[in-house]
Length: 231
Image (tube, rainbow, N blue to C red):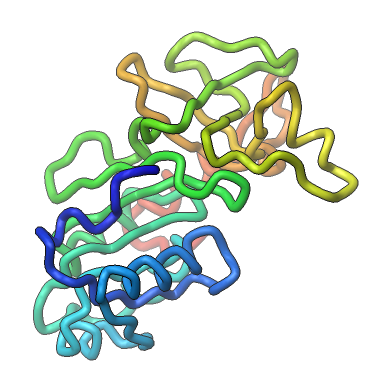
């Protein structure tokens, strides 16, 4: 129902090291899909070993990739770093592009699978974006009344697609499935061109004066400051 995440390999079999939990939206996908395409799964935490083993795709969350970037540069660049499951700082992107040819920044959830992704290399201007929704998905940004907001306006992310789960079980089910939409719990905005940028989780926002401030808007400039390791 969507384009393969491996078209950058030009038909070559994917050799994937996925560091995601197997029972997660991207964890299972990036094990089953490579095998279905005749590829190979490599299990390792060592970038040099990955490079020597011919790995061309490394999948992980921002925190998992931050751990990899603490290692020395590999003997050769690896083809692609796939990042999903959280907000990424500019420092992380810079570190990844020292170790990989390009980064695939993507957005999805267990209820809908992959929703959007953005692939970029050194010099790209839209690194914070997770791209436009795939053809089978639709994304809207809404305010506290569930009314859609204009482009470049921060609000809650809701989405639906051909693969949306019909329902979920749990106490918070009515909060996340409403009127045919799945509410992801993320805050973000859509550009004039239709590209989605995630700025953080709704539950990471704090009241400040007369508005809400997402902690990533405070943490990212601190993390990107020279001499700061983490915040």
